[in-house]
Image (cartoon, rainbow, N blue to C red; front, side):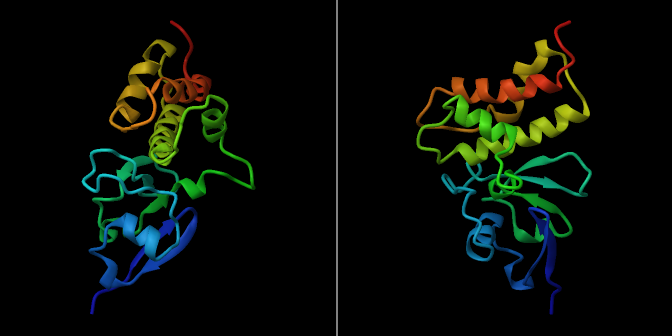
Length: 172
């Protein structure tokens, strides 16, 4: 008999049955944890709507992970973050607030993937600030692969940039 998979999701310890080890993380989040904010679109990791954040330790930089193609077993001892974990104490995260204020999304289906990828980027940016002139390249690296069928991406980039500017070294 295999051991259960232990992980932390949005700060709470979670145990997955060993039988769920081969299940895709997104299915586990939806079916076993009732966390449905992470969206399944293409199912093959191309659109990135299913992006979640993952850390191997609580203080490690967050990495973006495609939950549609990541098995639960790969999350053993990891710290997983979903869109449901961004707001704290009933208040939206600065990035979520910026998305709203910038009218960054239309239907919203892909928004959680953009938010989680950008949240991981901000985590790296806080740890290692870049010059303001390099910010657009960093944003493109972190969220450039996320697909949205409703918008022209400009408002997503603007919303992310507004928040990310706080963590840059300034114009050089």
